[in-house]
Length: 524
Image (tube, rainbow, N blue to C red; front, side, top):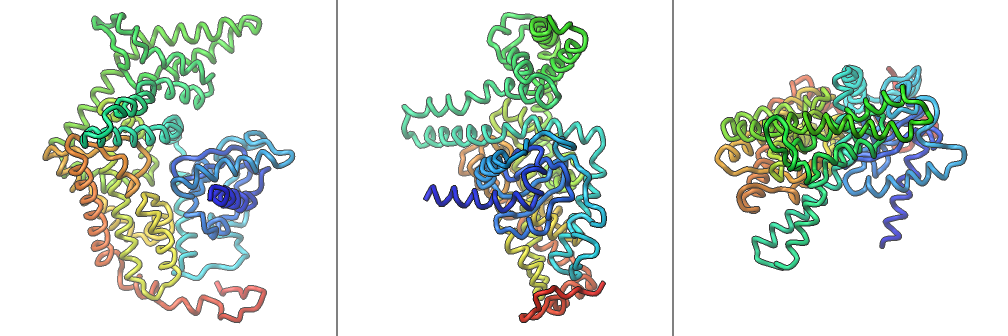
């Protein structure tokens, strides 16, 4: 069985590689929860439509890196196979060559439009899934151009620091939930302390990992960033007094670690520029840790601690006092935030809340946006009974949508159609308002990790009440999001003209069964 699984993952990787231009076109390989992220030398070599046609591929996202949506679990198994294929190819070195920066490249090829293929190639019939996908690709390209501002590029760098931490957050979060469940049931009392140690060990040192990733992302020596960030969690800081107060280990958390590591990078770069090469190996690391360490101890720890505390207090106050209204706004605006690239600013906030309270109360509310999207897609499916192309796209993308992978539905269905995207946001707003209402009533619903949403978030749920209540509230929010997204889209997601055009039979746009070997061009 394991061999069959490995062969399957290897086959997926082998199918993807030639469609992204081969090993020589790969500058970097990474993955997050659901996506294989590739840095490409030449974006024009990618065959978008052929990639989307692969059974294992749920969709593609052209952002700072080229992202192939494979789904949770699958992507973690396919990525090593893909890396092995790239490394084994003769004369290729990922990360080197012109345009090697992740996501760099010329964009679309001359004579093409994003996701549509050459201009002189066959055109897609209007109202089909291919037509919507082409329109969605154009929207993504425009969004990418608008999102390439210095502030949004900075937010992406911040996201790059925290995304690699998600697998550990998920694993430790599930173990923490298992430990809590065993405690509540009174089972295996001798094992529970071990589970607590496993779940808490990573979180107690998360500042070190943040510092390491920060230095790596900003062009410094990663281990020096980790060394400076380690000061924050070192127990000995309890013997130090700053601003008239005793410091405490962990004060400042991930925000302090981020700031300390960024400072370390700048100190290190200054040293590399001015310290003689003969002394560099001794002087540069010493000055980097000394200068940035002193600033961290006598400034950053205290300031970052105050900011972290304010974030936690504000999140609790917002949901305790504005509950339903706050949840409505957050759930309704999350998809537009994703479109604007501003959702990445929430990642360190989620991490801070998890570090402080053991869970983030914001993520379950934001996850309702995906529920609205699923409900909207189901309504589109029913409203277009004669459009087999779009219906097939929805059928293939809905399972991933239930698990929180929304890109195929967003960029392949709702966003290109326009109005269903808005009604999906309405569904997310009502789902978020439902969860927010229970937060206001004292039943906090949180997640012990970031990344998953939809049904995939159930194993990570936690709160201040029993696990059963927490799960029930989250499930209720999903049902509300599904229902409102469906109803809003069914009744308000289409104009009469849209329905007439999209429900026009697509048989005329499809070649008959006995087609010639050469494709028949469709008239413009």
